[in-house]
Image (tube, rainbow, N blue to C red; front, side, top):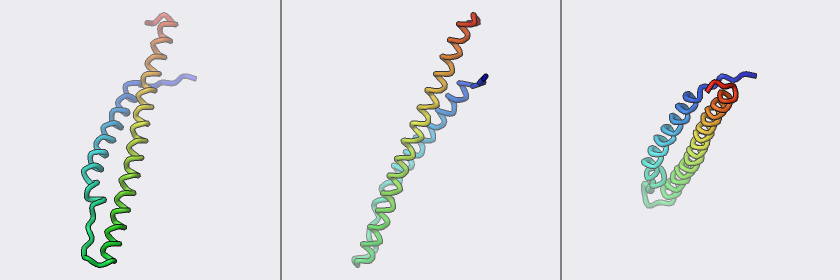
Amino acid sequence: MVMNVNAAAIGTSAATETGISAEMGSATAAASAALVGVMPMGADLDSAEFAAALNAAGASYIGTAIEHLANRGMFAGAQDLAAATYTATDVINNAALGLA
């Protein structure tokens, strides 16, 4: 089976994923204070409970976003490894065939 893999394209994809992760991380960090810093609208119990619920939802979102960013980072790392592996394999194969 012959695989035609463009290692440069895979590397570009990995760099794109890394850039997207950085952008999403910055946006999440910038919004985190607003997501978990909701103050009650009044001094009553309902306002306090509503603010607590909003803060919990914001904290849940931040946790999910952090997990997503970690997964994107691992995916980008796997793409980098794949690009390096394909490049090294091509070098070894070309040397074995006397094409290098």
